[in-house]
Image 1 (tube, one colour):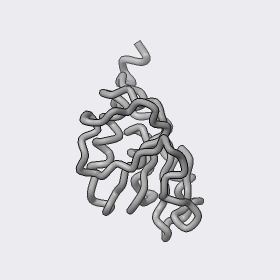
Image 2: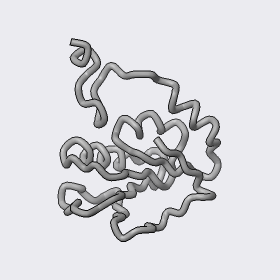
Image 3: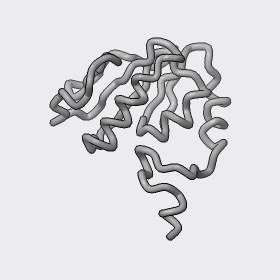
Image 4: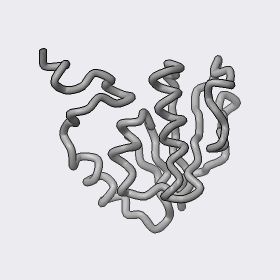
Length: 126
């Protein structure tokens, strides 16, 4: 996962193929054709609707482009962001990039399946 700091990253789309998706929009109602990047917004740490959107985009809709987390993104969220298919996280201004890097290496694998590796670990070994 690529990490960006809110102080240095722009949240405005820099290319025509970027969609900024409101967290109350159902991704299944959209055409994803030609999109290179989708920005999903966390208005607060406790609002997890963007996690559901990312999971839908990866697992059900097969979206292969970049999914970017923006808004109130904390270091604590990073492992789940990766598991739900996010490629880039724009961390809130008060978050430390060094701590974020360590958080990404905290867990080597997971027992359950997720958006990135849908098969559970016990089935992968068989």
